[in-house]
Structures are given as structure tokens and as C-alpha cells.
Length: 428
View 1 (cartoon, one colour):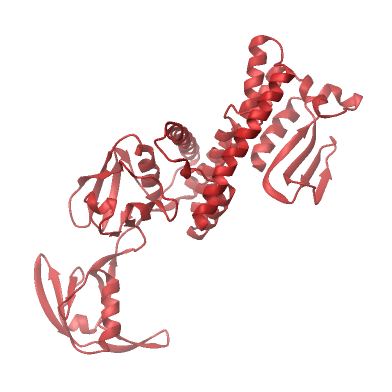
View 2 (view 1 turned 135 degrees about the horizontal axis):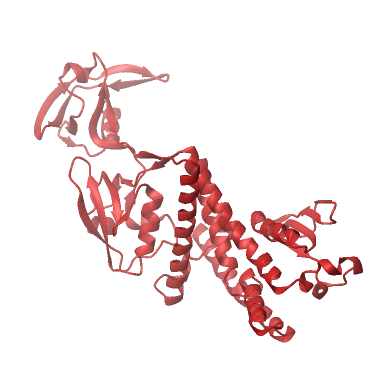
């Protein structure tokens, strides 16, 4: 929001319009400082936005020496540029953030599904565990965020979405995800609602490492063998192996494994070892880890181009989302507000700086887009009046502007109330 208001301020200053105050936050400032042009830069206690207050005869008395710099006396083309500068600053910020991240090189998580909940949408659609998603309806997927955005793009457009996947150890195939009655969840994540998990990094019971002179090594096990049972107890995940070893208490065990499509058994005697001050019974094997990450890196000009493309793509997605809300293809429950933004920011901070920067860029694009909506009180509403003035050759009447302002306040308060209600409902 600060960057948005700085856009208004910077362009106004270049066009000869004076700003009285540039405030970060609302309310009575607890810190402020004046520059040589007489603009007060302030920080206020309510962190829900900010504003720039220009010299304007419609908002109070103006000193005679400031009249040439009044916003209301500026030509309409200047006012249009000043209004547009805020949203454009948001789009510029998003481009720069995306570009900066891509120049640094980004390690992103592949869209690798490690678990599928039985009975879920994903399970009913035939998505297997330990599968990497390659594309959604032909749209390439390189990481988890790509999958989420591509899926949301398709929801409301089609009943089934073609998802190209490559299960571990198998060839590429296409499954069809049934999204006819799917909506983003009120609670939990989009992954919870689909019944998929990206949380685990290792493969079932497949062995990725065997310690020298360990029980497993002496029993003839090899890297790549898949543990499928312990004492005839089926093994599906590495957690199953760990749980079994904890309860087995060092007793000799019969390990069933699969190698090159054939099953075999080995009798193994666990050894007791000290791990971080705790005694544990081990057989000397570690899981095979999937390569869940990929690196995306660009040069300066490629990064700027990529940043522009990402910003444009995000704008298209927001437009599509708004359209689906209006037509009823998506529930109004999907709206979110400041509480949701704060919660989302907190969650992505835990995921790392790169995730937070991507989130920042997304919020900046959203802010720019929303402010361009033709709602009085927003930049888009002012722009609508100034374009009408440009066409008519004279300003819109004060009566019409006042009526529009009242309608705008009602619309904004309604939207904010719905968004805040949804935010609170998701936290309960």
C-alpha cells in the first residue's frame, strides 16, 4: 500500500501538484517529518493502508500561494495520470519482485504428490501417490504454485480437468480430476479439499542408503530395494518402518522386499545404536528421497520479461476470479480480507523468503487491480469521472459525484464486511 501511495505522490510531484501529507497507516500520526516542499511524511497507528492528501480546494481552504499547485486545478490529463500512478506502481512492484527473485535463482517445490486420501476427489479421479504433476489442461506445471493457479483457472469452466502426471517409476499418463462440484475450502488448504499431500519428501519403503557393516548390508539388501513387509506386516511408508522398529524392541525380524519385480525375504537382527543421546534399534537403512525441488534462474532482461509475464498472468487470473464470482461459478466465500492476508503472510514466511516475496507480488497485483475497479472512492471511480470529463469537456456535477461516493461507500463496506466475515469464519 505504501508503494501504491508513493506512485500517486511521485507522479503528482513531477506534474506540479503539491501533496500536504503522505501517511503510512490511518489515524493520528505518532511520527512525522516535513520536507522542503512542505509535505508531511507521517506514520500512523492503524496499519490498514495509507493515503496522500493533495492541495485541493474541494477539501478545505487553500493558501493563495498553493493555488497553482492544487489538484482540482490541474488539467484533467494530469489528474488521470496521478490516479493511474498508484495501481501502476503496484504492478511495477510486482514485476520488480518477481524479477529479483528469478535473478537470484529460485528453488521451488515440484508439484509432487506424496499421499492421496482414500475417497477424496483426487483418489476418485485416479491420481496415484508418489506422482509428479506435469501439466493441467496443457498448462505446464513446474512447481506447487503453478498447480494451484492452473487448477483455479479451470474451476468453473469445465467439469473435468486433464492432469498429466508421471508416477514414480512409471511412464507419463493423463488422469481427469472431477471438479464439477469443487470449491476452495472454507477451512484448511486447497490440498486438503482435493485430498492430496505434498508434505513428505521420501518414497514409500524404497531404500536410498545402506550403512556399511550394518545388519541390512550383511543380509544382502541393496539400494533401490523396496521394503514391502516386516514380519508379514505390510509397509506403505517409511513411517511404517519406523513405527515397527520402535515396537519391535530389537527382536529378530523377517523383512520382505521387492527387487526388479521379484519378492524376496531376509532375516535381520537389529543393532542398538546411540542417536542424539538416545538408544535405538536400527538395521542400517535410510529412505530414498525424491528430487522435489527444481531451480529457476534468469538473467536481468529475461527476469524482467518473466516478471512482466507473471504479473500479466496474475492480472488475468484475478479478472477470471472476479468474473466467476459475479456469474456464481465460484462462491463468495472465496473472498478474503486483511485478516486472511495477514494469516497468509505468516504462513508463507514460515515457508521461506522466496515464498513470502511471491506472496508480496501477488498481493501487490491484487491491490492494483482492485483499485482500478470503477467504484467511487477507489482510483477506478475517480478515473471514471475524469474520463467522462475528458469526453464531455467539463467536470461531472458535484451532485452526481456525491451520489457515486455514497454508492461507493456502501459497496466497499459490503465487500469488506463479507471478506472480514470469511476471514473470521476460517479461523474458527
